[in-house]
Amino acid sequence: MNNKLKTGLLAACSVSVLMVTACASSMKTPATAEVAVSKEAVDNAAVAGGSEFAPAEMSSARQKLALANKAMQDKDYKLANDLATQAQADAKLAQAKANSAKAEKAANALQDDIRVLREELQRANSKQ
Image 1 (spheres, rainbow, N blue to C red):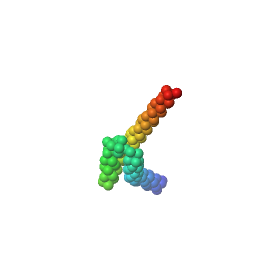
Image 2 (cartoon, one colour):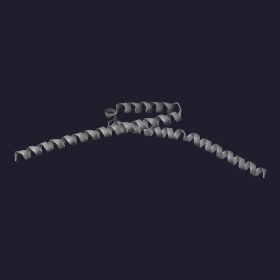
Image 3 (cartoon, one colour):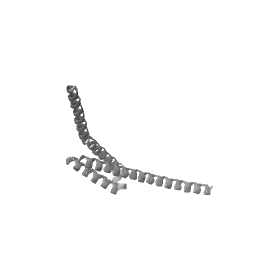
Image 4 (cartoon, rainbow, N blue to C red):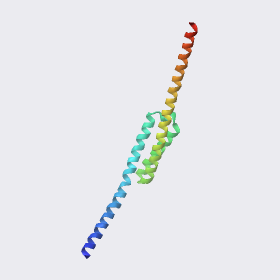
């Protein structure tokens, strides 16, 4: 019975050590993944025209991404994760603003085209 107790205790300790190790190592992976996702979000926002249509948000996203990379180098994974999440949010906002501005610009151009067509129709109808 004493031997079974030792074996059970040893198994419980082994499981505890594995769980602590898994938690500690998983703290590195999400920060790395989050920084990579944030970099991609910043790149996508830049391609969408975020620098032109949402410069403040793009600047903020880039600064936070740089700070997240610095935190990764310093092995402050929680800070890196938090900054990467913020950078991603700023980048998505910049991309949304850029897309909205482009859509508004296209809608305005379409409205102008419709106005011109109406004027031409009115002119053509008044000549008849």
